Image 1 (cartoon, rainbow, N blue to C red):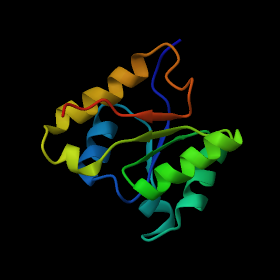
Image 2 (tube, rainbow, N blue to C red):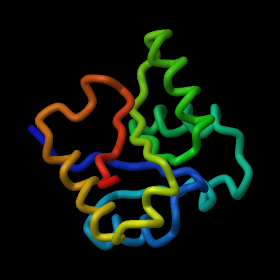
Image 3 (cartoon, rainbow, N blue to C red):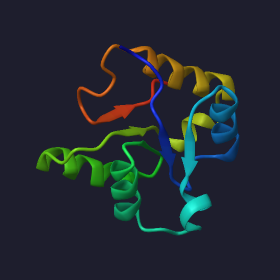
Image 4 (cartoon, rainbow, N blue to C red):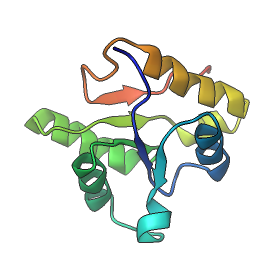
Length: 119
């Protein structure tokens, strides 16, 4: 059954997106609230996975780590998009993309999902 899943964002996800998701009822934990700034990516992904939260990031290095984990068969879930794309679109469009992903029957058949944003 589709539905919202708990999220864990890294420091690269903008505050308005985090606040907007929370206002829409998403359960969001933010890395800087728990670890401060400049935390290394692997421990963040391990932490999110241990809490059964979906890691959310725009960090290309974290995407590379996720690709390595996927190839190795490690269990995790990651939502990723290019940061610069959110600078050209409305916040509501980004938030709607999260809601659309949550509405999918099985959103994480593959552990990495690219947020669907207009070009």
